[in-house]
Length: 422
Image (tube, rainbow, N blue to C red):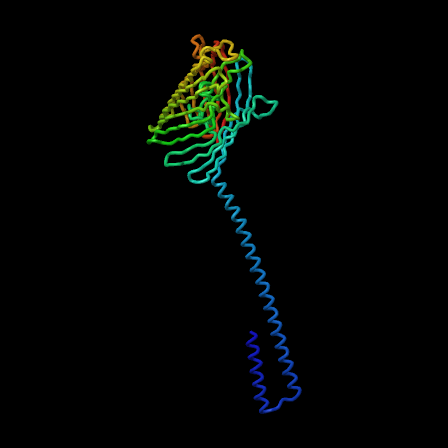
């Protein structure tokens, strides 16, 4: 625009020169021409200033836009990382509340357990899993019933196709309920007594385990880990039973003088069928507290078969403890008790899924924590009940337990429960 204006002035000057050759303008005409040219020059300067201002404003906007884009990239990157973390992290859990109406009058309502799962996928072949549980509502110095427990916290690494290693705190691969015990997966308000008192579920240790599939439907577990520690130096001699369940250390500053070794084979190659066998060996189940080594061997077998809504579960488990301490009751403060060198139990549980939501079961169980003493009777329990699933992961339970203990006393109870998992 400015170049065009200068050209116009030049042409005008030439024109004036030509006109001057023909006719000399008067002073008045010259003054008018000068004023006209001055006005045009002032207009051109004004346009030039406006153009420079617009260029400066455009430059400021470009810089601001670049800053905004850069800042957005930073924020977007953080959001992208958060989204990636959330995609690779899983949260779940389960819980159950119970009401137990006992024949002896000791009725209870219990927030039995609330459990939270947290897992994270670090890569395609490395992952983390944890399970934290609060039992009986709360835990504190004034509540001996409650506990806060870390049941699982481990790294799993797929080191080869169909084979992985587990490092950390994990559930021992034994029995039916020990690894899968969400309330919507089993019948009965309470977990069965054989797996509670003999296996003993829920049972976890810290160590290393390899697992995998060696053939279609045939899997294995091999683990070395912390072991049980039955306290044979109990000052309250009158209550000494040397029960397997009392030996769980729960990986809490666990005595590790003698580690334990667990092996399991499981077959699921036929639809609806599961067969499994577990053995565990520990050189001294007292962790050096007893007068001599008390080696312990656990053997567990179970079978599950499901077809057309009918499921049958059967399990047998037995501990054999080799040592005078358990065989003859010669442990410190044992008060002459014997027979704890053999502790065994079994149960059979048929169930029927009447509809997709309603199922019924019956279970017969026997167990004895002093089975090595032939004069000691086993505990015997008949359980009958129903499960009603509001959804596949939310269940209502009602059952009756006809319980005859080793002394022949009846400890019957009516049990109600609600449970969930997600």
